[in-house]
Image (cartoon, rainbow, N blue to C red):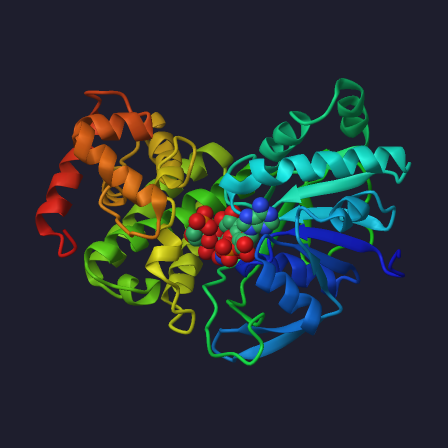
Length: 395
Ligand SMILES: NC(=O)c1ccc[n+]([C@@H]2O[C@H](COP(=O)([O-])OP(=O)(O)OC[C@H]3O[C@@H](n4cnc5c(N)ncnc54)[C@H](O)[C@@H]3O)[C@@H](O)[C@H]2O)c1
Ligand SMILES: O=P(O)(O)OC[C@@H](O)[C@@H](O)[C@H](O)[C@H](O)CO
């Protein structure tokens, strides 16, 4: 049955899905269908159809989200939703490593949409990585025959974006397990040039731009960079939450200095005004310090192999700073700390530990980060690793 309202389909009903993207779409007048692999979560969403967002800034307040529904990704309902002319927008927040898993469903749904002559649609992946929606588009095209690929190119806008709001893990003692805790700050910037249809109704708080890359790199190489450094150094000193870790003088000094190292490179590359970028850094440091969020160092540090990727939050700014001949010593400390992060429930952290054990730290650094063997930057990371390892309380 078509809904009277325009529809949005959102993959991933986790923290950012419920706490930001799905909620914003709902507030903008869409009926939001969440799709998640978690059967209990899907059942709960269909039972309650609503939840509360608790905004944890100084003056705490709440927002309620209602009129939602949910379906499992492998259900026929999702294909029907993708083929429904009322569906205007598809978003994801499943994790960058999961995009490949949802691509076959999206491809199948888009073929059905073509057959139903249901018109254009925009897809926006809200994962923390550079060119995340382009990657999803590539995976989707891998599942399309050539004639369908051509139709999708003409009718489906795959738009990259930058998405920013800290949404920590939820608390277990809520009456409604769907409730979610967020910070007040939010920013969602989308590449307007890739859209294939006007986003209608307009999504409140979604900023459209023809020049996305400055936003993407500014956010990933600043907020996420500092966040990761606090998580890894915090773990080594035995802190459980980001706000506690960043209150440690040494961690705060290294993080702040790393943000300035990456910041100097960002200012050079994107032409940001230095004093505005300074304000951006100050605001980020304040966000880390928010004591109400109690964000988990294991959530923020999760999947260190992804975070140590060449274009990701640590190596991205390090390589950029190095490229401009700027200092990067504190960024190198952050990279080194990532090699010491261990959490038994985090597969990547355990794989990373095994790699260090098998190859030794010098070769592991080269293998994981793509830094050149014997280079000044690889050496700085290895030296910082040895210094941290010697002092760590967690090893
Ligand atoms: N939490 C944040 O502060 C935040 C902010 C900005 C961006 N992000 C990005 O959003 C994404 C999700 O992060 P999160 O913190 O919400 O994680 P999360 O673990 O809370 O949510 C991910 C959800 O995706 C679901 N999922 C996993 N595989 C799936 C599949 N195949 N199909 C459908 N659903 C699937 C999970 O069950 C889970 O509910 C990540 O890429 C993250 O980098 C997170
Ligand atoms: O989601 P990840 O694993 O890429 O990164 C962890 C956090 O840094 C991240 O989720 C931030 O909270 C978020 O990017 C804030 O906008």
